[in-house]
Length: 88
Image 1 (tube, one colour):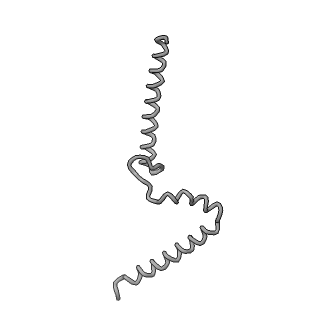
Image 2 (image 1 turned 90 degrees about the horizontal axis):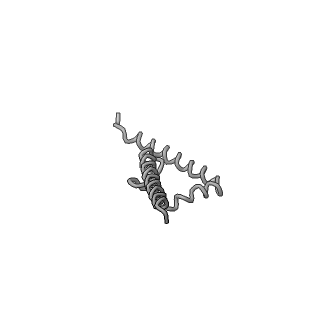
């Protein structure tokens, strides 16, 4: 093995380390922006959440049912909040 083979492997290792560090910094930046769960933040949902997109594709009507339930809940919460105000 010639000396330039060792030099080439050294350069490849240095470039790989620099690329990994750059990727690490990019992931930290994406995490600060809220676009990625990487090191400091963990996702709040369960692992079943990854199947939501598949369910939306297979059963698009399920989305509308959930939407209606949320509207009813919000409407009842607004009424309950109105009743808790000070009495005249």
